[in-house]
Length: 309
Ligand SMILES: [Zn+2]
Image 1 (cartoon, rainbow, N blue to C red):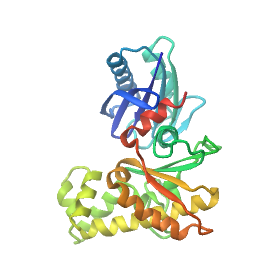
Image 2: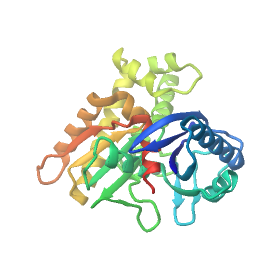
Image 3: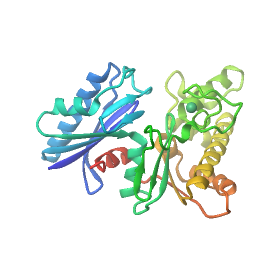
């Protein structure tokens, strides 16, 4: 009897047998871009490989997926970051059918699952109340209150990336105006850096990335080199994150926030400390709020997905 956690992301899929909050023999592959069947095959293969490497029989599989999830039905309802997932996909049933036997599969949102991982075995282990903010390609959030993951009426609880930080600001990937994600998500930062570069504001970000995706690592390097565009974009990201987080913290009255995701994890403690200063300045009631960097980092999703059981 073993549980596998699966982290299905827009760029990669990762899976590992998880035991007492530790991933064992994790495997990962780039996320297939030819539709749900190929993604199911990739997930099932990774599960079989980690099971074989650990010499265990898999009985439970938890999956964290990017987008809106109907977790009762095990359906990924809306996943704009996955190619070919324009229609709702019964992912849990498809993975169970492909694996065969008597395997229980559960599905939930990726950042909710990461929040669960951090709350049980990571940076916030033992805390009943926490907000997790995942700064990656986009910006996602997960909220745990009284030890329970909050999903909300429509499954959209924690979507901090789509709160407004600048009413007349940049257009967000969702079509909204001035959302946090448009200021702090890696994809939005890349688009803005390329726009400024084309408008005559040269940046090491574009020189380092070339035609390739502007990875989190490149933002870290450009910042270290004192690049002006990177510095200004990240200053805005810090401010935007601080404003949104301070509002959430004020409303739900919590004092612990975990920051993770590709960009959040890569920029790490100095970045998180800067966001914490903005939160502290803006939060109502002048009370202490602690922001900490994810400790599970790349494995938060896998560990959290296993916690769905
Ligand atoms: Zn938005």
